[in-house]
Amino acid sequence: MFEPGRIIVTGGAGFIGSNFVRWVVENTDTHVTVLDKLTYAGNLENIAGLPEERVTFALGDVCDEGLLEKLVPEVDAVVHFAAESHNDNSIADSQPFLRTNVGGTYQLLETCRRHGRRLHHVSTDEVYGDLALDDPTRFTEETPYRPSSPYSSTKAASDMLVRAWVRTYGVCATISNCSNNYGPYQHVEKFIPRQITNLIDGARPKLYGDGLNVRDWIHTEDHSSAVWAILTGGRPGETYLVGADGERSNISVLREILKAFGMAEEVFDWVRDRPGHDRRYAIDPTKLRTELGWVPRHTNFAEGLAATIQWYRDNEAWWRPVKKATEAKYAEQGR
Ligand code: NAD
Ligand code: TDX
Image 1 (cartoon, helix red, strand yellow):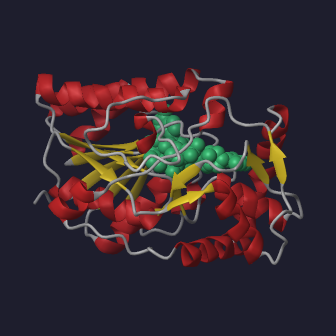
Image 2 (cartoon, protein in one colour):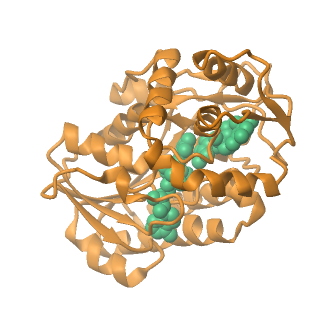
C-alpha cells in the first residue's frame, strides 16, 4: 500500500479535481497542493472553505517546467487531472488541447522522472472511440485506442506518453480511464448542467443529433474513490478502467431532468449534431473491482441526478456568471 503524505492535484480547481480534493480532505490525512492555471473551467470557489492546513493553492501551468521543478520534489505523488476537457471546444479550437493535454503531461512525466515521484494520470474512456448501440461488448483495458475527437486524441496521446515513460524510464505511474462524470461543480458547458441551468432560466434544453447516443454515467464522488484506490493500491505501470454500470441514452437523461422540473418530455430543441459524435461509451470495470475491491456508492442514478439538480438550484451564484457567455458560444456553433 502506497501512503502519500503530500500530493499535488493538478486541475484541482476544476470539476472532477475539486471533488477529488474534497474527498481526500474528508477521507484521508494527506496534504494537497492544488496546481491550477484557473482557465475558464477553473474556479477557486470550487475549493473554498477547505482547511488551510490541508490544502494549499498554487496558481500555475502544468506546462511550466520551472514551477514543476519547485513543487514536485516537495510531494510524494502527483495526481494529474488538469486538461482541456470539452469536446465541443476542441472542435472549435484544438490548439490549447495539444498544449495542455499533451505538453503538460510530458512536462509532468519529465519532472516525476527526474525526482523519482509517483504519477497518477487521469484519463477518459473516450480514448477507445465508440461502440455501436447494439454491440454487446464494453471497453476493457485491452481495447485498442481509437479516439475520434481532437479532445480524445490528445488524451490518448497523453496516455501513450505515460506508458512510454513507464516502460523506457521506469517512471512509477498508473492510468485511469473513466466514463462520463456528473455531480456538483460541473461547468455549465457540459450536458447535464447545461440542461438543468437552461430549465432554471426558463430556456429549452438542447439535444444533439437524434439523442440516442449513450454515455456511461458515474457520480464524481465514485470517480474520486476509484482514483484514490488506484493511487494507493494500484500496480505501477497498470491501467484501470473506471465505470459504474451507468449506460443511458442522452434523450432518456434529458427526459429524467424534464420530469424533475415537472415539464412535458418533448419540451426541448433538437440541435445540430456534434461533428464526429461518438455513439456509445461503455466501461467494463471488472479489473478495478476485483483487483482493488472498489465499489461505487452512487448506484441510483435518479437519486444522484435529483441531488445534482438541487445543487444547481441552491448554487445559482456559482454558475450564473458564466452561463450567458457559454450559451453565446453554443449559439455561434448552432448548438
Ligand atoms: P474541467 O475542465 O472541469 O477542469 C479542468 C481544470 O484544469 C480546470 O480547473 C482548469 O483551470 C485546469 N487547467 C486547464 N489547463 C491547465 C493548465 N495548462 N495548467 C494547470 N491547470 C490547467 O475538467 P474535468 O471535467 O474536471 O476533467 C478533469 C480530468 O478528468 C481531465 O483530465 C479529463 O480528461 C478527465 N475526465 C473527465 C471526465 C468527465 O466526465 N468530465 C471523464 C473522464 C475523464
Ligand atoms: O447541449 C448538449 N446537448 C447534447 O445532446 C451537450 C453539451 C451535449 N450533448 C450530448 C453530447 C454527448 O453525447 O450529450 C453527451 C454528453 O456531452 P458532454 O457533456 O459534452 O460530454 P462528452 O462529450 O460525452 O465528454 C465527457 O465525458 C468524457 C467529458 O466532457 C470529457 O471530459 C470526458 O472525457
